Length: 372
Image (cartoon, rainbow, N blue to C red; front, side, top):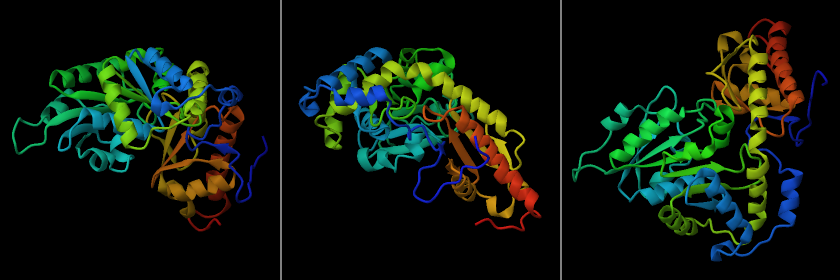
């Protein structure tokens, strides 16, 4: 590893930690795509899509599965199926379905959202119970609880299965449906050795991504019982998600499910190594434990040179050095490990952060030097 990895404009970063969505398909995925047997999935006769859906249903222990273009579409289809316009859904306040899906529950399903604060990504039973609406003409019916695991905003935290099951059982006992945004549920499996079908068992529906940790180029899966998936297929069509020769994409998804879950522990190890290596770097504080493949770092402005006291400025400086990171908040950066970052990339990220932050501080009085 060289001490610096400068790049010229227009070139991709040398080490890309922005997300596990930036991965390239493996050679076996590309081969499977070229050789895929295809039909017309809207007619239901694409053999590769049918195989992928059967595999996803089997792995999650659900009756059926549906291949969708994106995780956001999968979540929104579930919300649409489980609710009626004018209903209210409960959701943890930092969940992806609340923060990062462009207001889709309201725009697409006419659903009002009530976010619930939590300390560890899972609302308490007491907080859910306090938000259940009475059977009154003045109130929107509470019909759905949306959960997330692993929890992106909390740094890839694994919500414990026992706690998730207890809350889901309570919600269902009160007449609510429960949907799980399991975009990175295979990371939860890798972190706990609890198989995916047990994570899916307490909920009515679950979405998981093929294009994040599992490295497929496109696609997510939505699973549930037969009635749910039958309705979901209609909603997918309404939303424009019916793809024709989708088997070329499904073929990569099949390889992703067969080959990629077993390697996720390596991503977790690298994330822990990254966090350990950054300890002691001035101006950064780790946000929470590293349980899977995500490291969150909060900036401490008083320990940083003036030019690097916000996350966008630090991200730009790091990218100049060939290391791409994600701006998670004005004062928080995220680094995500995945198939396409190895040990050398981790060491480069550690060294570059240390050099950029320590080097600027040492080169001049604090706050007196502006970086170009």
